[in-house]
Image 1 (tube, each protein chain N blue to C red):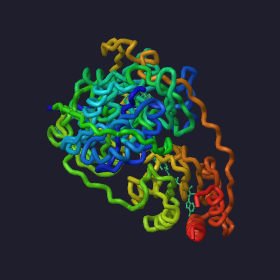
Image 2: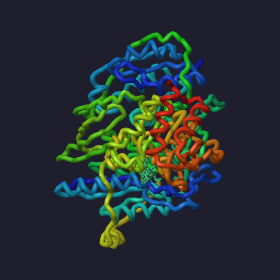
Image 3: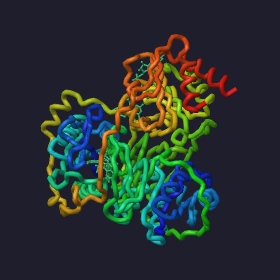
Image 4: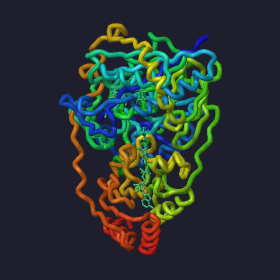
Length: 320
Length: 261
Ligand SMILES: Cc1cc2nc3c(=O)[nH]c(=O)nc-3n(C[C@H](O)[C@H](O)[C@H](O)COP(=O)(O)OP(=O)(O)OC[C@H]3O[C@@H](n4cnc5c(N)ncnc54)[C@H](O)[C@@H]3O)c2cc1C
Ligand SMILES: Cc1cc2nc3c(=O)[nH]c(=O)nc-3n(C[C@H](O)[C@H](O)[C@H](O)COP(=O)(O)OP(=O)(O)OC[C@H]3O[C@@H](n4cnc5c(N)ncnc54)[C@H](O)[C@@H]3O)c2cc1C
């Protein structure tokens, strides 16, 4: 069976969920061989093997942390040359998309970003994309070179599929161009203890209607009762009520949870672009005409300060 | 010595319009008004601020797009850019990101540059990869997705707010930068700016000028192929309830029915 090269997104050896989802999709088109780079690369092997990686290539060097993006492209290219895979897959994040794109140019291949599904086709893998703020669904292929495809989080279930997962060190050489952009300092984001926004099964978001940083406690309480991540509209972020890293939408995070609850958010096209593929959508808004209601499975026309705390209490009561 | 800045701007269909596909599965540009991708206004703004800080700088705005794409260039010129380059050729219709980046890279090399500034993503394709590809093609550092950027002599510095960390970056010029919508609001063109823009030079280039073969671009030459595009079925009308004091409880009932609680 053809090998499929999968780039692993991990933080110090902890594999992020979108990579495990990607392994599910990779198995539809071949045998996944994973590549993990940077500190903790080897520690990723057991969980990757558990999810279908027949082999885990690893590389660690100071360059991966000290310089932006390009050293990781060098590693991916080395793995590509060692394997001649049928396709190269990466989970979609800002950084992995850039890695994918540079690899595509180097190896003379086309690239598809932000696929929401992947199937084997007669002429290579077929990717589904949600485009124009998810108003359209397209099916596309890479028609030249080895398909390079990035896949959005929450596009496939995580499935156990134990495989050998033999660890092999990959030799990577870095060129002068690889160390062009120096990472002078890095400040890790403080953990909120809540699930990561793009990976969460439930997202509870607040918008301008929340009307103040302190009022986000109402949104957070609901999120905590449901074990959800907290999101925000750009209006709420621009007002300084919630951090930019929580912004959902075209220029923020794109989320696709099982359940999305929007409170005090009108539903502008740029916000919809980031949440319209959520499976179940719920909105609370005091304006019955708000465009968000066009999307909802369940909507409450009402004041979020009445509805959300009542909902939170009820969720807690039902969960006992 | 003058700092040569090239800003890449894309002409896109208005996202608030009813966007759809033409029969050949490319973006239908006839039915929806086009405009300068809003995220590229941030790139123009940062170019203007960097130019203000430099002793001497010249800003060229560059687009690859159909005839109407001149509107995007005019907008950028009215904001304060000095001159424009428009790559326009019938054979470009349907070009994907690999092809577009080839054309942009050749045009940038022909124009001459110390710094290339892009938006974080276009508002139509929204791939967010073109700046990285440009850096790869030009063989210069990428300093991308910056929420803050400055140029100090021959060094470009910036802050990149990533998924798990915020990074301070630094690279030597020449370099390719992309800026996010956190980099600072873009200015509105002034009346004076709009009048001045009419007199600023717009150079037109075609594929021959850039020594690019037609079969390397366009629908035929693309590295990707779109097989189908279907409109997402309208959501079946959801339940909408007016809160009469029990809204939160009713919603909890719905969530329980759906097995979320
Ligand atoms: C290039 C570009 C990129 C953008 N990217 C993004 C993006 O990534 N994400 C994003 O979100 N936006 C983005 N925007 C902004 C977007 O266009 C909207 O301005 C924004 O989404 C509005 O946020 P909002 O819904 O919170 O605010 P508003 O549109 O002001 O809506 C607030 C809503 O709250 C309701 N409300 C008020 N008080 C209450 C209450 N007590 N109880 C219940 N409801 C109440 C109101 O009825 C109203 O519907 C972008 C814009 C541009 C131009
Ligand atoms: C809905 C949709 C989906 C698409 N999916 C794919 C795909 O999966 N694979 C693929 O290869 N192509 C795809 N394309 C085509 C692709 O969008 C164009 O080729 C495009 O110009 C480059 O990608 P982008 O606009 O997404 O760039 P981005 O990487 O999002 O753009 C970043 C920046 O690059 C600059 N830039 C981009 N295009 C131009 C331009 N024409 N002129 C000047 N500056 C520019 C701007 O500064 C912009 O802010 C898609 C197009 C659409 C409309």
